Image (cartoon, rainbow, N blue to C red; front, top):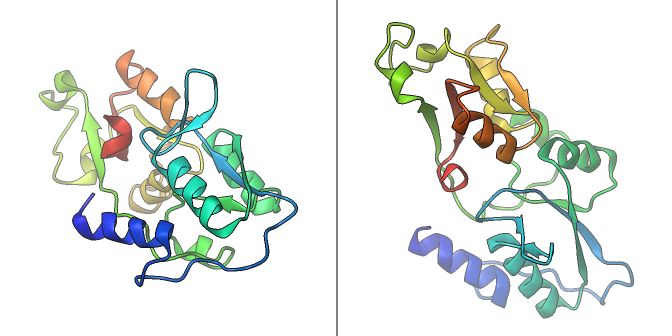
Length: 193
């Protein structure tokens, strides 16, 4: 994270000058926040409790505002479905897209994440792969994406007809990459690490 992102997070949590924190009477019902296995932002701890950078931020926000929060573990696909249906109050880490802008209210970004194209080394040096500099280089590769993830939206718009293998969550996609079930995938750097 850049120093500015850390400052913005500090201001969000502490109510600093960079942005207001929601001020209202403590809620009787907690806000329901979805989380999925998306390390280092959200994951389960040893005792199956929610952990991660964003869990810590939401807990600090709750302590400052007096508004309780409750975390619900879901796959990314279920997070998107339940957010759309209104069963969740908050879905953090949702990428801003024109379609989503019509449906959801977005805050200012808490942080910027870079997405990378990962290609197996043996494939990178083969004839079936043309270039990492051009997304078209994966057209002939077995490519994995996470359902409802921004990378799926991106690939559908840039490479219509690609038909990637769709995984329920990031953890399943990484496991498939480790097991050589996919030749390429797109994912945010911190998550893939």
